Image 1 (cartoon, rainbow, N blue to C red):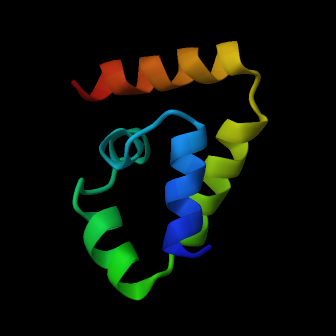
Image 2 (image 1 turned 90 degrees about the vertical axis):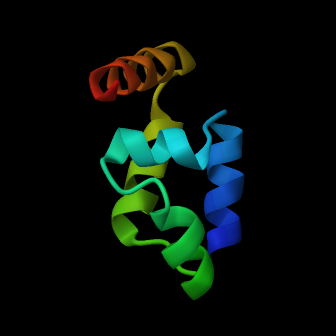
Length: 72
């Protein structure tokens, strides 16, 4: 997945890069520094995005909310 596709995917899920980073447990700067520079997103992130897209909206929102509460 290219970086631009990643940005479109998180936008369609109403997520920021910061929140996505928190959900998957990576450094907050990784998407904007490493992924953008290489124009390549790891397959792990692509899989997570695909799974989030497949969830019904209500379940997705609950999942995201619970994950973000865990890291705060």
